[in-house]
Amino acid sequence: MTAYVAFLFWFSVALLLFTHVGYAIVLWILGALGFGSKAGHIRGNRVGSFPSLTADEPDTDENLLPMVTLIIAAYNEEEVIAAKVKNALELEYPRERLQIIVASDGSKDATVQLAREAGADLVLDLPRGGKIPAQNAAAEVAAGSLLAFSDANSTWEPGALIELLEPFRDPRVGYVCGQVRFVGPDGGNLEGTYWRYEMKVRELESDLAGVTAGNGAIYAVRAERYIALRPSGSHDLSFPFALAKQGSFSLYRPGARAEEKVVPSLEGELARKRRMMIGLWDIVVGEGMTDVRGYSPLYLFEVITHRFLRYLSPVFHVVTFVGNIVLIGAGTIYQVTLAVQVLILIAALLGRWIPLLPFRVSRYYVLVTFSIALGFWDRWRKGAPGHWEKAEGTR
Picture: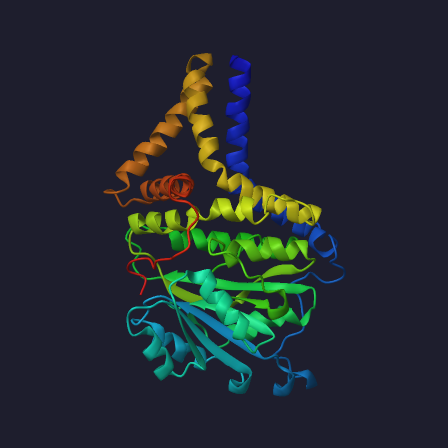
């Protein structure tokens, strides 16, 4: 019995360390060894290396640039929608080749009126149905061969769109996400720090076999590859793995930069992630992420490590903690590991009042991990999500 518990304990510890730390190291090693240029359908240059749209070549004529539709889903965004449309109009891209659609998901404020006055090409005043249905409705009437998406509170750099589109020069590319930076006072929320690490991981994934997730602030997809998801779906998580099964690559383009305000408190971040995690079950199981057919070996490795193992981290932590208690009398090492776990929990609790970095990191990690479990609990109690809410303090 002790041997069995010890195996589960160390196996869970190993998986936690690998998914959070070892994964990035392995990605870097595989990339350094050249696997990214040889795996699957990739030949020659890495998938992310394509000719520049801004290069001084004949094919930079404006008439050859693709028609792009920028879709902005909005729900009660009167505080920011005019500025968002203005930001879109100031992008360095030929105006006649950029269509701006604001899809209002049953907004009860002045979102629709302000979007029209700001100069959006098309404003859809839709009944309340959720973010995904609003995006689906916009995609149906979009004129672009490429569909770009952004949150209403995201601000793009002037050259972000043209940077985002460069990889689509290669017909194998179906989806591209850019880099989002979180700005403003964090109130103890380390989401900005986490995202800097996560963006580096996605850059390594992109060079290897493609990213396993994007972000809602800045991304684009081929119109012909767009998938009309169910209300509980998510472009961020669903498009990369679904397109991988179609033989398309999903890439990260760090030069395509956007900014959003960070949630100004860790409690607010927990609430935001908890809402996001409600639909996780429907995406992972209902939409077929767990159906590994169609994945390349390297992409399967990425999905298992960066998605499945990460989503199971609350389970691994429970196994590690309970197993450690059972094994407390089996040797000094188990007394040390239990002390470490208890200290992390105490540091997370004290992090609410003590702003020192070790306490803040512990609190952030514990609450974010807990949000996964809370999301699954909410899904079991309330069913599949549909509607969406904006995070307080991010407008």
